[in-house]
Amino acid sequence: MPFISKDWRSPGEAWVKTDEGWEKLKVLEHNMLRQKEDAEKNESSTSSQPHCHITIKCTREIAGFNELDEVVKRLDFRNAVRDVRRFNYICALLDLLVGQQMTALSGCTQRVLLAMLEEVASYATANQHNPRALRRLLAKLRALSNAEQAACWGGTLGSKPLWRQHALTIKRIQSNAGDFQISEPLIATQPNFLQLPEECIREVVLRLSDHRDLSAAADACDELTAIVNEQRVWRELTRFHFTKQQIDLIRVKCNKKDWREIYHALMRCHGVSEEMQFAEMLSLCRYCCCLFWRSLGHPCIADQCPEFRARLQEAGGISPPSPVPPSAFLKFFSL
Image 1 (cartoon, rainbow, N blue to C red):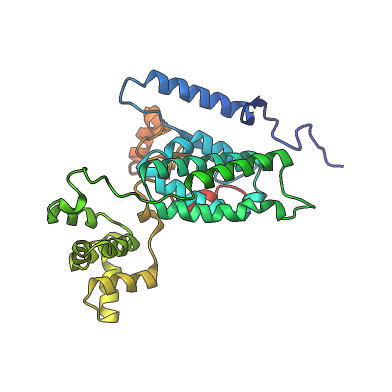
Image 2: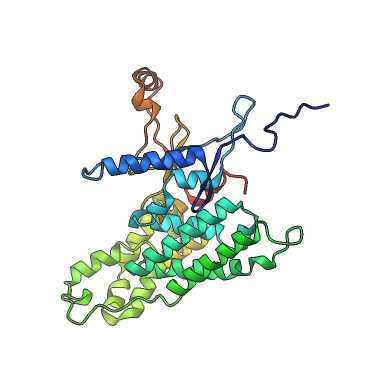
């Protein structure tokens, strides 16, 4: 007869009742410690380093597992929404999770994701930022609002009080962000965007990384249409998303000289690299197995242990961290 320990149903974690529900004690202590560090560093320019150890492969010696809600809290995703560099990454992650599939996630994970989504809606409406991503997430919410109709052993996965809370949160998000529109600047605001020198407007357009934004800009007015139609704009966009070898191959194969046509031909062949869509992404340290925001860094064993660093130098130097797109991030969890 197999031996079943007292903790066969769970890892034996300690849980604490909070105003937002039950929380793991170790996660709660971690968040309290980070808040204390942030308060101490509030007067300085140094920021905290949210990071989280991740189990990449389970073995007999390492029988760990990763929980999405715990990792999201340790990496401070909710506050990361307010950073314009990380906003699109958070939206892309929510786009993969929010919807009918959320009914299969744990109650803690559902609550955390909806809190992130509410933060996204609040930031986007307050700062007039990325309406396309917000509208796409609101469309996913419509499917989630009918989640109680999805049967799982006779009902939804989760208690009725939990889903009542979810329904209130969803209704609040939809009411606050449902009528979100980009408002025109006040007439008294000077200078207007179109009053800037043409060179300045062109530099702004050259920094758009999505062809849909270029098309929308071209539809706005004749001045932007002329700039968007310039070959330089599409050449720089093509070089940003694709390698020289890919560009040369498609130019020879399709015999195209127009950079807009070259860009769309490459899009049909290769698509856009997921890593090129975000100003900042999560990274995975090869030595600590930690996930972290690259701009903030993390306390790495290679920095803390001189002997380990010396061995790395002898072995050929320190390897850079691996970028983790949203789709790769979700592979660390059993979803």
